[in-house]
Image 1 (cartoon, rainbow, N blue to C red):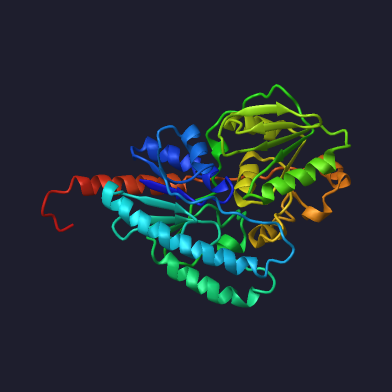
Image 2: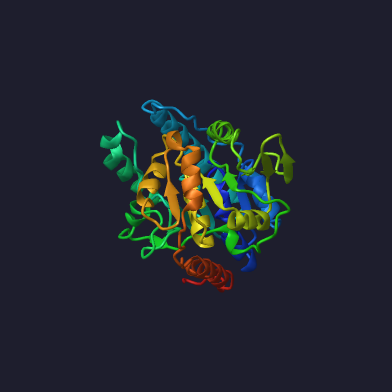
Length: 366
């Protein structure tokens, strides 16, 4: 089984953890195609995986006010990357003969020689102002890419949709399967942390935007009385807890540590990435979400989740200590979230299909 997460922040890797564990439990040999820091994280939490370095650098995203030029350049870069990764997958499949390929938002990771599945919560892309007129064309081209895959797995549910039209637009597509939200915290027990904080900041997303945001938040909290911890995954992959002059920093914390910190911190501040949204929903944890400027997916999620009982939404430019205080004082009631078992059932189906093919007699016409 080949699994390939998109190297855009850590979310595409973290949400794959329960799928990888279930695949291993079912007897799949699992190869992960990617690069640091994603592969380092997955090898740490899923030691049974075998890593195949794809040679690609992490996708970068700069925080700018005008993205009119940036978007087509990014689209062109990802298109070229998609063609290269498809050639790579074809070569790898000849060598390993995969019985299943699972791509998380990588449109070149498929093969006509093996069942290929695309996992994405963005069945429909939303373009920024200035490029809205191109949306019908882009999404039509995207559906052509979808035909390369045997199925599209959407980590959302129709009844309790967290992604709104990003995912619900795939309801009537013939090969989509809504598999329910995914979170790595499904599988880990909460661990106590030796320190307590008023605010936990989960840093995520591509560089250099992630570091720029950390610097902005450090400036915001520098002269406050809040005890603040910044948590993030880094390229080195070693777990480190550092006490600075004004803040604490947790690098590459374990799943149990982070689960405990998220649940017990009065306030969690995070980007509005979909994997983070699924984590908070599964834990029933209120959070202050700050969409990454220029990322239309996060801006849409912010508008969709604005009335959700778990989330407080604020633009990056409007984040103040008063906003933080109001978010801490809100008393939100978490709604129940049903993660479902659809993704487990689909993996079991693929395992049985492979077992059945392996035991077919020679010369069978089945």
